[in-house]
Image (cartoon, rainbow, N blue to C red; front, side, top):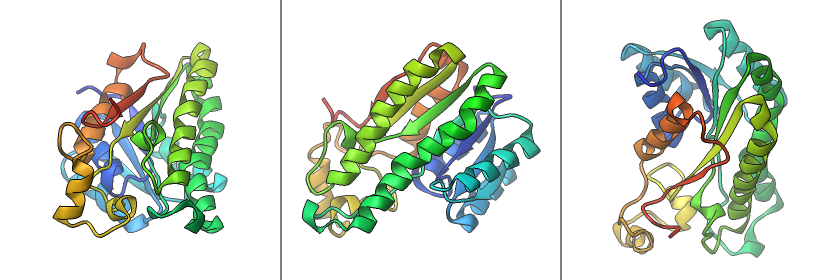
Length: 252
């Protein structure tokens, strides 16, 4: 088991990529703290992990709020005693549409969930990781931050911010043995798919996007979980500042 003895926090763990990461980490021996704004979804994932023989707890919370990060940290320590990995997976988007149609509220929400959440995670966990002699952050960004699609300007910008912040954090925190990496999924089979597409998810509409991915399919939660598993494991102890595209060749 590649994560035996580790505890990992996974935000946005109640569905999609986060659920895939939480389940995979648990199968590989990690204690998992499943965080989600949707409390019942987090409870479902944690319960199913436990029924499968893993160890997990659910902690509902909003990653844009400092108080909720403090609650998340306290719950993890109370139940598992320590934390080694934080996966900043929670994310959102504005619907694919012309830039002048994006409202201020949509803009603020995208940057709060996608970027400010990482600010709060760093504030909460860097002092702790320093006291423990190290730790690892894995930030889920997007190919949108590398090869942007039209109609998603502010989402693209938020994910580019995650990528460069991850690299900057890796440089600054390296002397503390704190690793910071990010994963860039291509468009995936999640609840946000129709928002990214800006249209109904029909076979014909989906094919327009599949045509831009050389390997010819969307990403899956397991694809992203496999990459996160490597970056969380001791096999990646000399890997930091990496921006890993899991994209079927989209960014080539």
